[in-house]
Image (cartoon, rainbow, N blue to C red; front, side, top):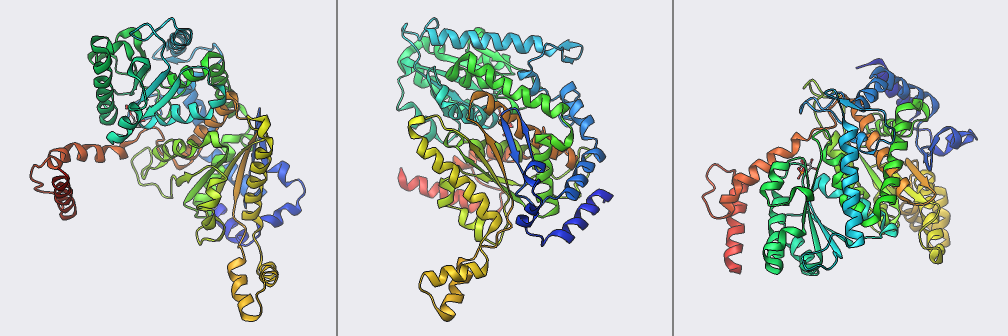
Length: 541
Ligand SMILES: O=P(O)(O)OC[C@H]1O[C@](O)(CO)[C@@H](O)[C@@H]1O
């Protein structure tokens, strides 16, 4: 164990009982334990971090050479060592013309060329220059993809609803036929453009849904069905084999990981929904965060600070999950998006060199927008036996001036929750509340136990003026680099995902058994369930 980890643990042991609230006796705490970058403020003053802990955590970044690792990321070194790839999603949003060389070639040339093609395509759809097979306009777009080819575009398209100027976008991901069925049944194939989005163009869910959509288009359009198809992929041979015209295919390179891919062609639905100007602002927001991550000192670097708070909570305090709580209905898919970004990246058990990790890696990430979550799981956040660090997001202003009173309520609720988590309610205060509610004697004591809140529960808050495309770009890049920071400190590879392979292989092997082949060699539970499910199918037919 390195000395810094030991020092952090010793410091935690000494300070674990110190109430977070008492740290505010230092009047400068909010300023010292918050940081800003352009439109974003990160407040981490409502955590148990003090300056000793923060200094040690910053030393930790030095001991793992975080700065050098950040440089290697942006330089395009092959840091995804199990797949032998560079990790250059940042090139998709780079604003400067400084070449980014990979194998001697500037990747920016291809990136800019593809972006220009995507923009032209979106403009042509908006203006009606590209029409549906019958000469009418496309009013709806279905994006068929899963994982990184769905969550990012779906989350961002929804987040930027106030900026939509283009066709309505729908997203189909699940192989459950209900998803594609329920989506198609409300749409007119003559007015619908289908994007098949798959980095590999082999993912079984996407190819199954893609084929179903093609049949649906063919029934209405016959041979002209493929005129309603577009593909986004790195596998151009496979998109051609699917029958999609090359000028309707937007390619990207394998140095863009699936869960980091919404900045390029996988972001086509976002671009179609919001148009070029807003999409460029989205990229600019992310690029501004990139510059900040590369250049800001660790002590004021937002993604680094968020990563360090995560390390403190996970490894030093032993909190094994974190809740993402956007007080922003437009960010309702952010928790699901972050589950993939964070857990597929850092849910690993071995270091880059294959040796077991000496300490916990990625925590469980979950969440829901506020205020909905308040009426569901916040009970556990406030009074449960597990401590879950909460991550709030809140805008100063909403998008509907006529509903400003809603937004004031939203802000009050967001701040009330972080305050309640930190301050709690002591037994003495709870006893007063119990008296006010008419309880006396032993009953008052019993009720006070139920009405008291332990408090001292940590939270961070990301505040921004308004959820614009630029701000959304900043927020997503902030989380991406936070994941990078944590992964770099744990020494793992944040850019592969071998853990999803086994289930995929077994599903392929199980399919014939689901269709009735003998389940020889399967464990008792799996064959029992196969049996039961085939009996149930038989009853229904
Ligand atoms: O874009 P593709 O190749 O269809 O992959 C979809 C998703 O599947 C995964 O490979 C894991 O299942 C993700 O990493 C990826 O985002």
